[in-house]
Image: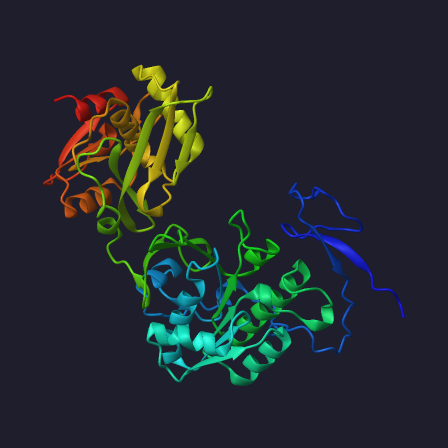
Length: 454
């Protein structure tokens, strides 16, 4: 009997080598090479691989331009992130930390989609009894939702082909395997082959398919990056297990925007969509505490008011610390340098801690001025007026630059009861009169005088 051939594959990019390497030559990742057994080439008549329906080249004018058919899941925040519902034949990959609520979200979504036809939920991690207990906790009683505990990917696809479900969910892809490949579940070869067959099945039968994926310690979905390229939508479920709030983000979406976010609250009865995140994130904000500033961020079409917290304290070590959560570390260091150079605020011997309350990530520069305001507020131990909003991008020369979608941000602030807003002078032009008092500023110095001078 011939000895099986082996090779080493990079878990990040899929690069293959005949020998183990500490660093991948393709993506430069360390310790990602895993030994795998080479699978034999399938015979021509072998039914191993799913193939999509045969097609012929067509002219652009011959292709239907009808809008894709979507099914609403009934979960408002999930539908928002997906771009208005689930597209038929789409493949959605959901990743997140253990215990964050991935299975709960998918099970609830599949129960809603079962109203359009039979839905099949495949679990490779739990028993059917455990899944039913979760369904009872969520109040799911639909008989159109079928549960299937199986780890063999071939059996799963065969069963789905015979059943023709309206929606399919795999929880999770790292627990499935194809026995004939000979490698362990979760390896790059298994994940690549199984995902290819599932995607071909979804496209051929136009079955919307959800795939749950585990994440590594770095927060990336485990397995080959090829998996994220193959699917239509990549969602990340973020949050702290000790915190009741969860944020759903789209890192890739072929049928919608990647800027939308969905906010959920974890309750005893499952995940509850949060329709007014601004009120939620500001509900526990201290009113007379220094180091707190509120800014307005825009995620997709939704404006969000978030609280930026800063703490400036004398350092007890030789080198001052710069610790951030929810904002870019390098951005905070840049803004601290602008404060020292342009406004003479001494931060060299101080530790700086900046946090975005509620677990939100602030990825746009419109929060620069609020970060500076929070830092100065903490350094001077002077609180900022609780009904004042701070918006603006800050340049290296200390100038305050305009930000986009100012009208939406101010409308949300007015709805939340804010009375005045410190905004870039360039953004005030063209704005309609409103109940909010606008304080236009052109430099960081003008903004600090407006916030801290009586």
